[in-house]
Amino acid sequence: MSYEEFLKEFLVSLSQKSVWGVNKENIEYYPDGFQADNDEKKLKFIHNTNIRYHKTESDVLIGDYVVILRPKSKNIHSESRFSINQLFQIFQKNDWEAVWDIIRNSLEVSDCTEGVDILERMNHYEMVKERLIIRPINYNDHQYDLKDCVYKKIGDIALVLYVVIYDSEEQGLGTGKVPKSVFEEWKLSFDTVWENALLNTNVIAPPRMYTTLAECYHPSYTQGAFMALGSKPVDISGFMPPTITTTKQTNGAIALFYPGVKERLAQLAKGGFYVAFTSIHEAKIHPEGTMKPLQVLRNLKGVNEAFDPTEILSRKVFHYDAKKGTFTAMEL
Image 1 (cartoon, helix red, strand yellow):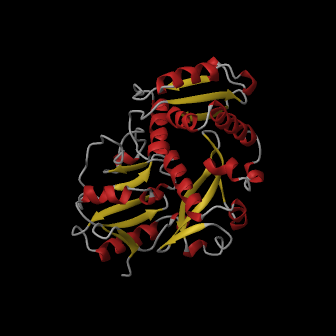
Image 2 (spheres, one colour; image 1 turned 180 degrees about the horizontal axis):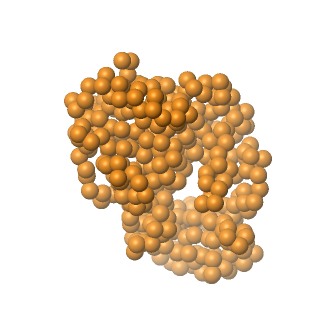
Image 3 (cartoon, one colour; image 1 turned 120 degrees about the horizontal axis):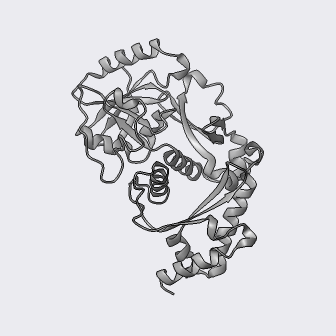
């Protein structure tokens, strides 16, 4: 069976799975090359899908996808997304039943996590894996709070594993730290969990670079998308250090730790650079040779003294060595 024949039969058969709450009306099919046409909601879907499946941000959808939307309440829908190409590969290696097992299991997990206390389900990795994210906090200020948590330490920064409890326009983002005891129950490697959580974070909040203060206030979704395919390169200069954050901006300093971000910034800075994390929400980039690290540190101290101590991420200047590919805290 060819890919085209599989796609046609799959969409027809899927629409007949009424026993799973699936019908023609709640299936959305998005073909390869789909574009949003100024629809911001669909643009986010395209960006998020490309990041999750291809680790690339782009305004054009890469691959064919199907989304199943099922109502849970008046304003809430359960959403399950599938790559047609991945399902076709499963079909080629196995059979149709293997494809339907993937769909059914995903819908069942969605049913289990909707409308329940997610904290009660944390020991079941499959039920929370897409809710796991990474948030940056200062290690020294939170050392006691972190003793039973899962995190990675870089300099005086702790990148902490959290689970999203709720995320809505009405309530905002609510999270909780993942205890070590829960992580141990999953019986998975640290790298497996970490890479998945960092990918989720990237999907929820893609990285952005704003070159002026004005750009930081209510920017459009695509503004500053320096990691996106086809984005226009903007050289980083020392005159106006750009702000690195995410689309959400809250806890946006995590953007520096996404895969490929430091390498891309080195291209734009034409070499290595220094980083001042001016809060948990953002960082400033200074190309080598534009400002001495000690001056960057003095500026950072001034920022940290002027703002809420709970928002301090680091009291150190970090350096990215473009030749060695290393990112370290400097002792100044």
